Image 1 (tube, one colour):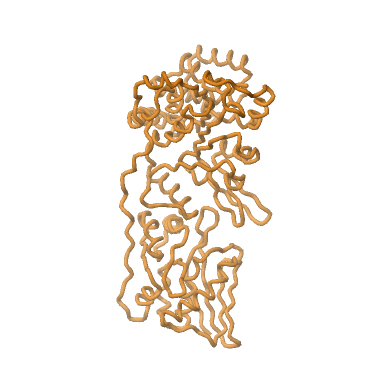
Image 2 (image 1 turned 45 degrees about the vertical axis):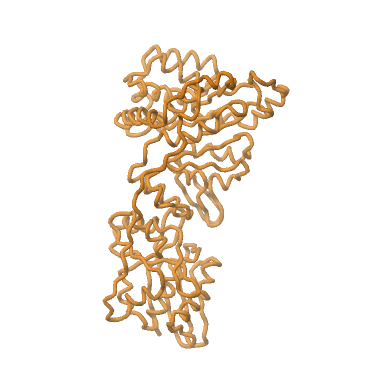
Length: 502
């Protein structure tokens, strides 16, 4: 009998849980059994590993009873990431490589039938898990996955392109060493859409700047062709680059979804799902649970164009994550929690034909049609939006004479200064202020509070809307470099919640 143990990791939500791949060889009828709550694609590794060993000139134990256990047994395993550890376990059990050398390694990789290593999801998450645990083991990954894992400092990441590369380094008495992976060079962010491309719309640009300062959610409402989508697409360009910790969190999420590009390290993500997206696509789910768009947009921007066209259940599913910054996916078999710290920006027409309030074209919708169209957005959902901004139509004759406005770089400088003030004062953005922090951090004078209380009574603002107005007013005051929130700041914040009209 022979036993070999190889360390690997399985992806569970946003974590990379440790897995021991135990390979046992015994006499008896030849068989290859794989146990440990393995999904179908994991069980298919038996055939990939068999062919890869044979085509690489290595010996496969045909006359043995093979049992492979993926422990812990209650942790679901999926994907082809266990091909490499299973193959190394078989080689160690048959003494083709030195099993003692495997103790200092963790590995993952999918094998082709010829023995080449193919990339796997979650390389960065595996590297982060090793660092958080304080492990001294080295991480072995295919070349394509090793570059992203090497972005985590303090972890030795080794790369290989073929199974024989590992065999050469692990045979008894060998002094061959695997190549250490090098992270891709961090390149300057490519220039995105510039705010100066949009002429006019001073009010909408002002709202965009305020939203960037405080990480406020934003809804643009206006006829077709007014620039709503163009404005929304430029929000990410007004935000500062991510710090090291936030960049790692964002990259780890994208890595788990197989969408991380090391060349875009540190850049804020901007996601724009189509309005046909389901609730699961937006908030996450499936079996095993996968992150949705709100998680993939972590520390970035989620843009929902044609907002009323989204499935209502999908929009209602956003309500809790917008408040808490996380989403808990609960199923009968298991639960998974994902972060959901995203900034929502959306756009919509005011009516089915789109021309309500358009001075150039008459609206042909009846009041009932307008009410039904706007009623696709529930009151509780709209109540969770900070800024509701009307984007008016500009006549072509006026548009030609308008001067070019400020660039995104100029606005970004002001945003960065105002955000720095907020972070120094309270340690978080204004939109993330808790209710218990409002009294101490908003610093509104008596006239401003009296004005807000009067407006709240006349407009019928809920307690949630009342608090959101306070947070927006704080962002406006930060832009004005004012220590206190005054009545003009409060008036502007209230005005920016009145963009939707029937």
